[in-house]
Length: 219
Length: 365
Image 1 (cartoon, rainbow over the protein chains, first blue to last red):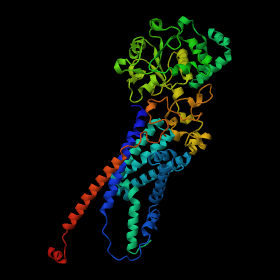
Image 2 (tube, chains in turn green, orange):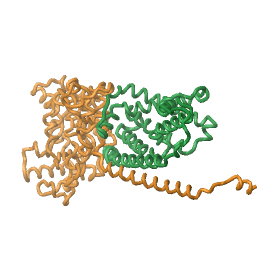
Image 3 (cartoon, rainbow over the protein chains, first blue to last red):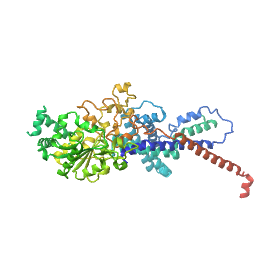
């Protein structure tokens, strides 16, 4: 199989399989998680919950008061990495072309140089987080195989994408194939690992905020 | 410098200086040291007597003659064709005067007289289906002819994507069982000069290299001369800055297209295509596909016909998404089944729940 045939396979059949498994996995996990439900809180609300749920979705993007000096690496590198990843995934013109062909939706992209810079910053932030996870005894103690594995699962597509655009290490065609394959692996495993927080994080925040509001800690 | 070639060129209005410049350019295109241009000049100018010129046999198989058209209508026909003054083209069906059994006799005479020394140029793929019956010349299948002619060849040049990789005839579903030269011949040096058609100067460059140094140029993993196929179209494209700025033509007649923006979104395969169209260009350096407003098709890459559509962006899926509803359905079924199991567990736990009273706790003390 030549590199071009392999690339055509990962862009074609491979992508079909990955997206199929991803969609099936996401629907499965969402149905499973949300169908569990929660017991209805029968107590009288201490305060009107109002928009506590929605506020919490936004507020939890920021560190809780006093927490930033205690875990600066987690907050700063974590924040940079999440925003950077979103920019690279959703604002790089070839990626937008993929979303357009899959969903029909498109939006203007950002200049490649800006995306390159963002990618480097994001990669560095991820490396800093990894070193912190290794150096920080508490984090290291709490880390399981899944934490290391999902870090690699996220890091590799970012790295291979950057290497392919920069024509480093392997010929572009091969590196692009590796990049797409790594993204496909990420898609397939995302619903079944902690990476599924991409789908559940905001729902959980809303639930917690709303419950807290009900208990009188409206935000 | 004198010689029959110089005189012949002079008769056609080409000065020795122009010839020198041509050799220097050829050497520089092949990334050879400056002295190599001079060596080429000497080697080509010292055109030997016809009987001592290197014999070249050109075999046409499943092809469209586009490759021959490309070389014979190259941008400096006289200069490019000077290569024919330095070689003895003993068999070329399109160009030779002989036909029928006379042509076949010429082929066999050349093979016999130059055994072990002649070069073979092949254009077109070789069909293996029905024992090669899809393409026959003089009652013999292409595969038989190739094996016979290649046996005593010094080297083989696969001219064009069909002979280099199988090309259009090999495209899915490959009805004739077409294959490349390298799929059949394993024991001879093979240079692939892919392209549909290939750039003429690439072929003359390889021949000049062979005539000057007696060796073949350095090749990449696809057997292509690195000097011509070392970089991608995308990296050498004059529209590259627009790619970097994120400026893309969305259709062939929108503002972006008129402003000459990048054709990536219109399916340009420049990023994965190794060739020198962007630097050498076509038709006397007039233009090349991207300059005339069409994306690169990727014709110098293996299996470019089956690369997922010429007008589909490289980052878009090669095939339309299939069975998405099946995937969603399967996900829903598994999800609902998991939900049902969890509910059953919950209600079982609820039913099985035993209330512990204070008395129970006291008792257990």
